[in-house]
Amino acid sequence: MLLVYTHKITPRLTYTFKHLCKRIIGIEVSFTSKIEDFIAHDSIKMSYAKQPLSKEIFVQSHSLLFEQGLSDIDITVNDWDETKCFFGTGERSDLPYDIFAASFYLLSRYEEYLPHVKDDYGRFLATESLAFKEDFLQEPVVDVWAYKLKTILQERFPEFVFPKRQYKIEPIIDIPCAYKYRYKGLLRTIGGLFGDIFRLKFQQFYERLLVLLGFKKDPHDVFNWLINRQKSVPFKFTFFFLIGAYSTYDKNISVNKKQFVALIKSVSDYCNIGLKASYLSLDNLNILKREKKKMEAVTNVKLKAIRNSHSKLNLPESYRNAVELEITQEHTMGYVNALGFRAGTCSPFQFYDLDYEVQTPLQIHSYHCMDFTLLKHHSQLDKQQTLERFINNIKKVDGTFSPVFHNYSLSDDDTWKGFKVLFNQILNSVNA
Figure 1 (cartoon, helix red, strand yellow):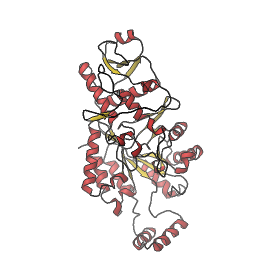
Figure 2 (cartoon, rainbow, N blue to C red):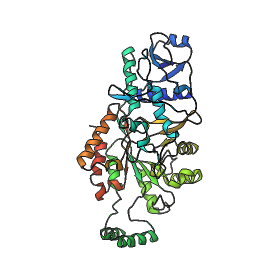
Figure 3 (tube, helix red, strand yellow):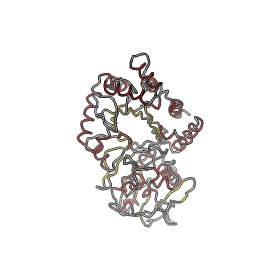
Figure 4 (cartoon, rainbow, N blue to C red):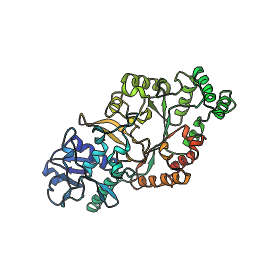
């Protein structure tokens, strides 16, 4: 067990050290503010304060982990070997940067509580982030920093055996609408047919008609293909089904349709099932509670995972609502139009509530790549090479890659041609 001496033990400090030491490096960590206890400890240890005690491993602390609330922080990002970091330390520090304060700033999403520009859906933009502005968005810097700490600990305590973690994949299958044409109800179906004619989309009209008459499979019905892919790998996909009411923002089929319920049940036999919270539920806890109950009634299993419609996060309200409903996993943290690590890490982490200064039971599984992001790369080769480079960044720290694909992006629609190949590339990366 790693013992950390610090002059003051705070919730921020214990939260950050546990993420870097326990979740990334894989060692238990405890804390003391008593010098005699620190001296008596005969195993792996370090100090985190303004000044070292003696000749122990020492990281000079920034004030951030000892503060409360929000303040206007002056941040200067510098190059550090092959990575970047901020919150520089003094000459006596074994690390040139306070990686713990820097990690807390990214993990807590400190910058998202500060004034910023939002998009039309009210989402935090990648371009507003420090990581984008300083060009380290596509690197899991928190994990990289933790591995630098691990190297120093290994050099000073060569007899200590560090556990080895392995690269993993957590694929997310987002289902905003299970089918392109089927089970939409009479009014929506007729409206769709007339809409195709009015917009002169005769090929789509013909395709819609063939599907509705049963002569052709719905183009977005890729569920058998996905289940077959699930059977071929040892890790689980997580499907997020939207079951909320029809609205301007959400246009899935009704959960009252027995065919839709049967689909969710059949997928749940092989994969994990999560709730895709409707757009209207993001500001209404009662609506979210009803959607949670509906999903649990369909699956007969307590709901563990949630993901928000349109990847919109209202911090901290979205996470507090999940905590209130005893949901343990949240999968909305990421960028729709940018490849990268919104929280700076490729390891699941706990939600830290900055207003209440407390670590919550909610575990955040940030996603790192959404299918939409890859559309900006025009050639299939460019998409594959971009994906490969990104995956290699995660493999360097033996992290967890969480990509988001929609059922329609795995269809044969012209827009998404070649995306099944990309999905398979990701699945095969475990053995590559």
